[in-house]
Length: 195
Image 1: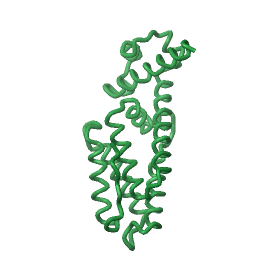
Image 2 (image 1 turned 180 degrees about the vertical axis):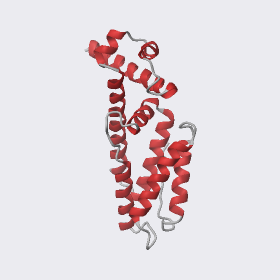
Image 3 (image 1 turned 45 degrees about the vertical axis):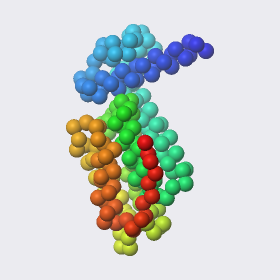
């Protein structure tokens, strides 16, 4: 059992080192030697866990998708109304992206289509805004599909506007404040602390 635990720690060290290196210099410029140095592992240990830098990138994307699925499950099963779920979930993810280099690297790599996956944000936001309309949280005449498209585009923009991920949670919260000011019923949004 100790061998297996050590192997898990080594794998995690490689993923964290690669994520940090990708975060600093980008995927293309990240050198295997820099990842090895940063992780404190040998080439043999690296190749025991991963066949290439691309395999590490795919693992980071998989970790991002799995982490995102867990967060979504927690929020979707938390008994909150759909509008508060959409807003609170996206703000929490933004906060985690600010702090977690592994999650952040997975997102950036997923956006580049390394591992060819979709993280499903557009569909989830669309679903939650349709549910918000059904729950009478949106003003009469508000088209939930249009609100979802605008919100999704604005959230993607909030991610790309800053020079890095610093302040992303505040940009996401601001995006929702502006979007919902025009379409949400008064008092429809009940947010809890997402720290």
